[in-house]
Image (tube, rainbow, N blue to C red):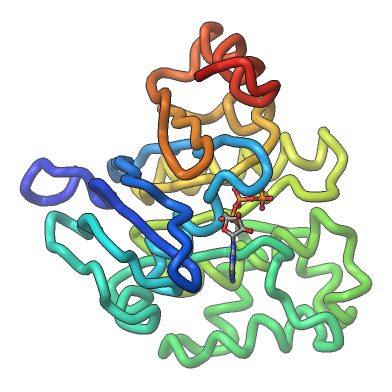
Length: 239
Ligand code: ATP
């Protein structure tokens, strides 16, 4: 909860369009501090667009985007980043030709020293310390995702937006990454995770929402009934 008891991040009736074609038709979502919310749904449902709106990368065409209870709809990505919103985009967003260390050093714009940034990253992800001189593009997919998370966490975000963390990774690697995400949430961060395939994230999610064709037909506790809901939405048999 934010200071006023409201969710840290809230989307209310959010609509969004590309070139006049509406792809989000009124999305409602709320993420409290210290909680993980999973946003699930099939290809093209609007999951990435929802994260882009929440990060200020894509403007909403309607509805409200609230950060700590304050309406920030229309604010620019840089302003939202400074206000504590961190988006880790699909595809990890690390610079493949730069070493792990150089990727981390780029975060000195946050005002922290190179040593502080490296210490924090290596404490959380010790494997990155062994790989510090290696080009990021030669890391395993899971290690690249850890580097992307380490970079994002340098900004000490209040809200962490994760897009398809599991993309292309083996199930055990994904499970390990989501344990780290659960740790991050336990430190008080509000985490919104987008995934197409749900199994791994549901183990750590406090709340789940299903997005289908730009609407949220179901949200609630990620208990066993969700699996039935999901298969009907993915197979297209639900209304
Ligand atoms: P996936 O799981 O396949 O990544 P998604 O649920 O994240 O899908 P979005 O990427 O948000 O879905 O896309 C929602 C809709 O908006 C899709 O129909 C997509 O084709 C369209 N779209 C996304 N980005 C753009 C863009 N830059 N320009 C035009 N249309 C876009």
